[in-house]
Image (cartoon, rainbow, N blue to C red; front, top):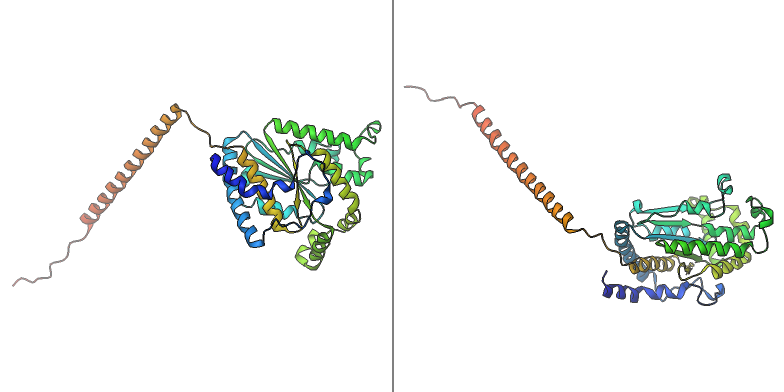
Amino acid sequence: MSKKSSQSLADELDRFILPFRVDGSSEFHLKSHKPAEKGGLDKDKAAEIIDDNRKRLRDFQEKLFAHDRWSLLLIFQGMDAAGKDSAINNVFSGVNPQGCEVTAFKQPSSRELDHDFLWRSMVALPERGRIGIFNRSYYEECLVVRVHSEILAKQKIPQKLITRNIWRERFEDISAVERYLARQGTIVLKFFLNVSKEEQRERFLDRLEDPTKYWKFSMADIDERALWDKYQAAYQEMIRHTSSAAAPWYVVPADHKWFARVVMGSIVVRALDRLDLKFPSVDKSELGEFKRVRAALENEGKGGAERKRSQKVRRAAVGSSAAPSKPDTTSSR
């Protein structure tokens, strides 16, 4: 994109980005972010923006893959029923799956527990030229593990290292890793889908009323809902201590899924736009080689067409000579 078109894109999309960006430049309070925000849009206008962003993302992804220098890591966090799965599916529905990989982090396996808490995420990082999506992430280690302290006891950490400072230390470790990734060419974008407790209740009821959605519901979700205030406090601390210019958080209003998709799609598109991605250029020697190959292919095509014409003429000639002559039906007088 040209500088002019990039500026136009910024003018169009930044109003859906900047109000929700948290980069550590000011104090963060989760309660100041409203889950039901709609950005002055209705669903029809939002659908147009979502569709435009899909097309832009598809074009940017092709350049990202061809350029093969940068990578993109997207982290999705949120309470149960916040809309993480559907957001990933919707925003990235137009991208080439060969250049995009989604990793969903569940309860750690015994093998994963034999490593440090960041290990399983590090082995899933995206390669250069690709988009990696973490559906939940290493941030669970500062959320569910903090709310459920009994989980920490199962992580095989030497007892003397488990102190009251462990959460601050984990924040520091995560921030250091994200700073390192940014310095290596990985753009880190982090989304907290900020859903209200009332909207979560409505979505749980929706799952319980629709047999096709039973599989999405777990009684554990209700147990976690009872700990809502503890989780909100944990999210606030986590975002407050791990937001940076290199790896900002975006607190996405998630009560209206269509607006959440506008926000997330706009953020990803603008991040890729800033990279000024271009298709790789070729030098003069390669261009010369391309011209020779093109000429050879074109001549091959001409030769093939000439052979087809010759074969057609031969078949016609053979058919003519092989045709039986008509019998003489006139009688001699």
